[in-house]
Every structure is written in C-alpha cells, then in structure tokens.
Length: 49
Image (cartoon, rainbow, N blue to C red; front, side, top):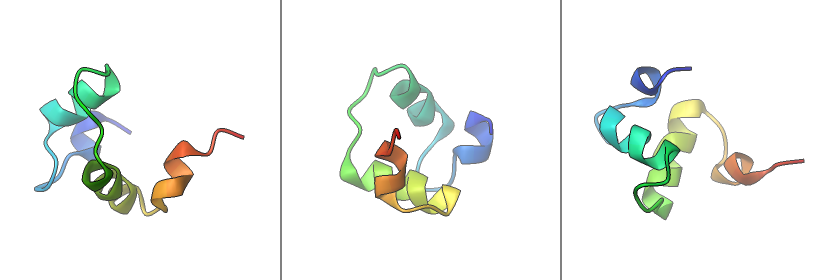
C-alpha cells in the first residue's frame, strides 16, 4: 500500500508521510481515519503479536 492509497479527503498524503516518519502527533481521530481506510479496528493498528 502506498501513501497515496491511504490518503483520503479526511487525511492527506503529506500527513500520512509525517506520521510515517514521526514528525507529527498521531491523534485518535487520525488513527480512526487510517483504520477505517484499511477496514480494520483501530486497536489492530497497535497489535504487534
């Protein structure tokens, strides 16, 4: 998946890029948008097992 695929009207590709390199805060609302785009639950983004 690319940053362009993940970007939407609610979260831009530049913001995705900043999240990826830890140059912006990851808010709950951003986590929800990313999870919805990926069709997963927000908790699944933090499950590292």
